[in-house]
Figure 1 (cartoon, helix red, strand yellow):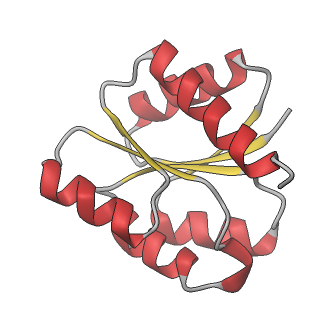
Figure 2: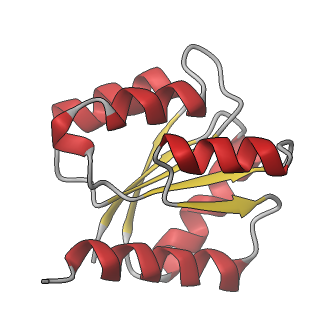
Length: 127
């Protein structure tokens, strides 16, 4: 069971993401925006995955990724971006910044489950 942080300001999307994460037997924690998510990650460095929206108040997902990837302790944290309002060039830029995967909203159960499993497997792999 993994501890997964969900950075999402929309209540409906929060509830859906939590439900889908918990269906896999993981523990979900919700942050209402990027700044809160960063503070949660730095105060408790035992999250195994970040699932984040892009458009949020205070610190958006793009700034959150930049901040996390600039911090040595988070260079290997898997980050799944979830958004409904970005184009291909923006997705490409987010992946270049350090996002692990991109997931389009509305979230689909099978796709999110597959992405979480891939990220957690890759992160726990021993090479």
